[in-house]
Image 1 (tube, rainbow, N blue to C red):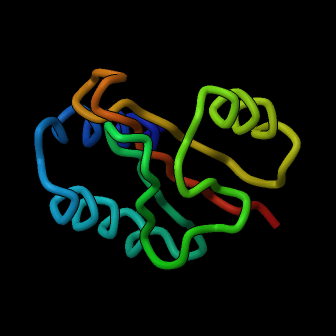
Image 2 (cartoon, one colour; image 1 turned 180 degrees about the vertical axis):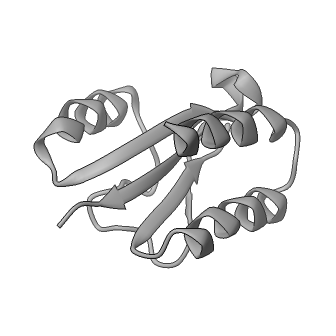
Image 3 (cartoon, rainbow, N blue to C red; image 1 turned 120 degrees about the vertical axis):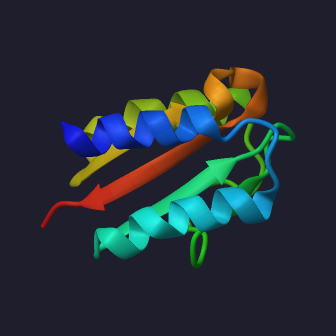
Amino acid sequence: MEIEREWQLEAGLLKDVSAERVKARLQIFVDRYPGTEAFWVDSDQLTWSIGERPVDIPERWTYSDVIAFSTQLGQKNQLTYTALLGGDVRNGFMTFVFHVH
């Protein structure tokens, strides 16, 4: 899917950038695709979101949170893309969610 490819490419470019830069780039995706949401988790495992943080997304991530999140993906009416910031797990990750109705 084209959106997934764009998301992966964008994530790869976001290495060693400020939170403001990540937010600006993710805001472009949310603006382009109404009814979506995006968030990212930084290298300190803190969640940053475009708009309000969804209630089911932790403020600070643990290994258990990552496992729980990944297992819930197939149980929700949503399409989710996740990519590593800068292509490296140590930088954190970003997630883009399409809500399917």
